[in-house]
Image 1 (cartoon, rainbow, N blue to C red):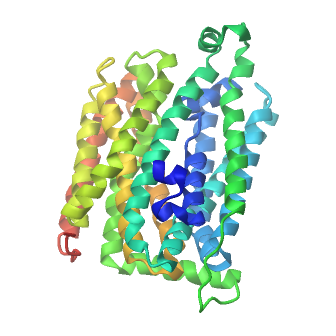
Image 2: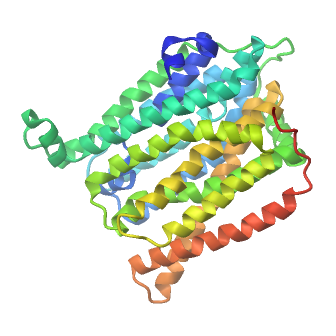
Image 3: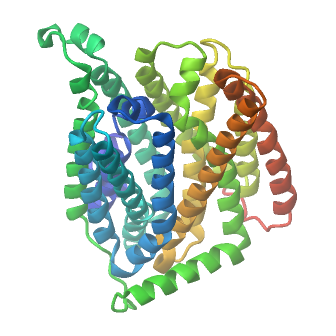
Length: 436
């Protein structure tokens, strides 16, 4: 983290340093520990909340690869500027959305989810590609592993801080105890405070992106949408026809989709295992602590194992954590939750590392966006399967809590079947030599 703040090593390059700040401010959002509760307190029903999240996933799915192709043709910087601008507007919509405002609230939150998905798609891949190209231009691409590890460690520390702030700002009773001078505050006010903080982060991201510099290439053609779509098709074909890249993406999506589905449901899970709501933000901060150590562990494992072996370690870890989650131990259920959340940063490190190593610079952002698209598709399918299982168990006479628990118990069995299929399919894919 000190390297980023002082601008030494690879972070002496402005693009690399700004990439670090951009991704930290973009991803460490204070409303994450109370995400579902926030929308429900604004006046949405659970069904509306889930439907709007589907809109968010659909926006990312439809825009992920085209935005990556545009980043490779019109420039990474322009996409990052757009991402920062949309993040600012999406948070402004939540900040001023009328509580229990009926159709007005629904339309504003619908626009929020659309812009959020579009912003995620614009930022995905372009930030890393711009930083990596900067190192490559300087002949320092061998320092990318260190950059990734440092940035992910710093991001986890920022996430830790954001989780604590989010939980304190959201709960009026806790906020009154921490800052007695504020007196008694209305929940209608405090639920906006985490949103206001993320709104300021969006403004910061916009200005970080404005200060970045696109890396020029000698064979750069005049940007066009036609070229963007050609790049999209070419990158998709490359991922499908390059066995190592396809293995990295499919193995990553196995681990990521189930872990991300749980991440969406953490507040429901914590309530199910009888945790008080004021604790949710502190648990989110605990998850961030694991993210500080995971990149270092992942870097070491990447140097000792082939990508296939490393992927199998991750997906087996994920399956084991899901089995423990299904036990739903009161309070002790926090431990498997931590193990499951660790999968997210672990998978992100490995897949980013391997794809950046084998992708050509001219298609790097698009290929990383293809990965993002497949990951979001996997997340959507995993979420739908979870929702379908809950509905099925309820139709068989189980209560909502019983159906939720039964689905937690059923989920790892599905993942185990997919792991076996992946292991058998990937065993014939040639692996790069392990690093010394």
